[in-house]
Image (tube, rainbow, N blue to C red; front, side, top):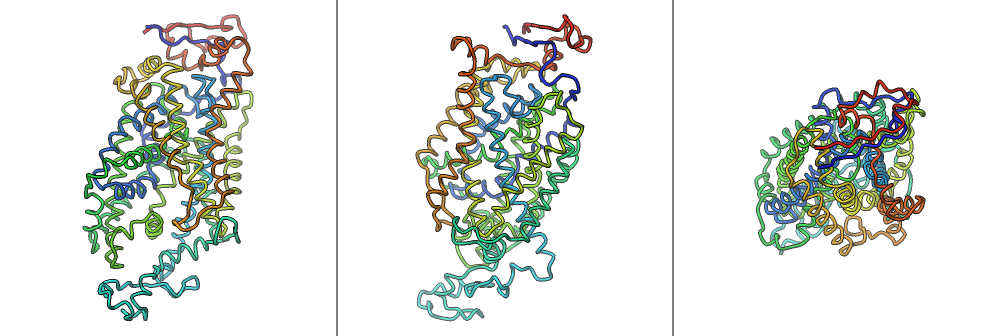
Length: 594
């Protein structure tokens, strides 16, 4: 079977000119594994999966979840890592495999830039809680602070109000009636909304900057800069702490959580199956969206991480190991979260369903600010993926000694300036806009759909399977090819259309409805990445010359790098013996036969 046709014009591949620095590789392969764990495993696993599991029938949610893991999650996860390893490029230049679709790279750069911009706020909030936790009395444990309201209650006595005839009876030491107790607010929630956020009435009221939160944000960005500025050699060392420490914290919290009163009820609420949910379409949609979200698919960062692998690394095995760690963490974290929820419900004397609301639990998890370390390496790798894509655009002739350091500084500064809008009184509304639209399920599904189409149908699924075999020494199971060609694109597009048809306007805490111009801003954030693919495709086709068939053929011909000739054509003379500009290397064509 005829394999890839290697065409190297001028003898020197793009980026291999004078002053070109050979691409970095991981110091050890475990650096790559730990980096992917640190990036793909985040708060989506710690909170979002347990919440969706509870919402969609408990343990029965694992059936659609595991099914979509094998037909969507693992195939695309493997595809992105293998593509980066094969092309040795970041999220933009990796699509030299089919240059007409380089818009996929630009789209992923837009998405990861938005993620870098808003996701760091989770770190800033966590750092703020960490600083406040050093006080002798935790500020979110009492109702004696300036930000507390008359509705603040430290100890709930719901058990004393079970008899409806006691509605006007004063309970406990709160001097509140049962009717007033029903509207009571925890000091945890009041600290979050009235102190940390100091939230305004809407998006149209940005209010003042929170200077304490701004300093925390600045500190976190400085930390990110100095962890990323030297490349994967430095981040590969940091990851051993940032990727493992959260697991230590989770284990400690689980041991503590299961000893609390009400923990058993919480855990049973989490895993108890509700078989009737399997017939609901929303359950399957939630499962698919969660997988694409938690596996960090479509962001380009997995491609960037894979590009630093050795060419012969067994990325096929790595993909399954990482998928197991990712999904296993999600399931394990559910026991941690719901043991705590069970305790909170018992403490307040209410049903667990009243506590297990998304916003409430995010506040509750803020009590354990060390869980924010799950987000730390995600931020590192997000910035690393963005910088890798940017630097790959500049060939060797633009080499500058401090090019990377300058690029990282500009990226961090630009994101920090945008983030200032999120540390105002209306900052939470801005944060939700970014979270709901810029890196939403729809944008990631759209990205994943086109990735499969380009690799399987434009470049060729069999052709790419041959390329993977060249790297790892054996062909992956044909299931991967079938998924890329048929199953995964259908799953992605099906979930995408369901999201589109069932679109609901964004709200905050189910009370505040965003104004129409807020939704317009949100859709602009979403379309800024989604339109990169068709706009770039049409632009390249119109700029090219010849008939449509000639344009298509020319624009879908891969642009190979020097390492492809080195590994795929070992019988030709070494590239190092060919000096740029000689007749020996004007045009080299090699047909590899497997």
